Amino acid sequence: MLNRFQLLVTLILVFTSISGCNDISKSEKFDQEKWKQYSEVDGPDRDLMAEDLLKNHKLIGLSHKQMLQLLGSPANYTDTTKTYYVLTEEYDMIDPVSGKNLIITFNKDSLISRAEIEEWHKH
Image 1 (tube, rainbow, N blue to C red):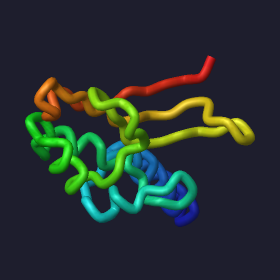
Image 2 (tube, one colour):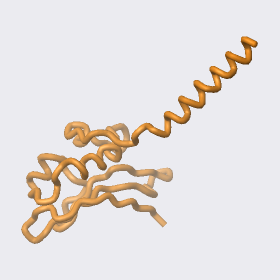
Image 3 (tube, rainbow, N blue to C red):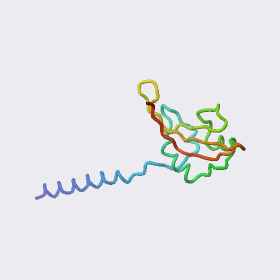
Image 4 (cartoon, rainbow, N blue to C red):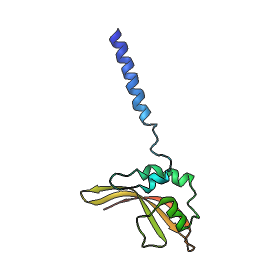
């Protein structure tokens, strides 16, 4: 009888911990310092912070300079109307094959007019 009770308690604990894992949020609060420390190899996960950044921090209307102060350097500098920050990248040996970027679009006055997450896949 004691063995059945122990088995029942064990099953309940296992079920509770497994179902509790589904409730874990896959996001975290935006942290400016962590964001700026991003590295493809060992940096913090920007992807987890991106949702909070878009929801709770006013990006629309920021100037290019204000964006740099908040987010640091983007991944590209060549396009004056659009820039991006790498959130995640997955590699196949050497080349990236998929990922997510935070795309920032500027209007004619160089103010952020749009900020969105874009997933991409190499075909």
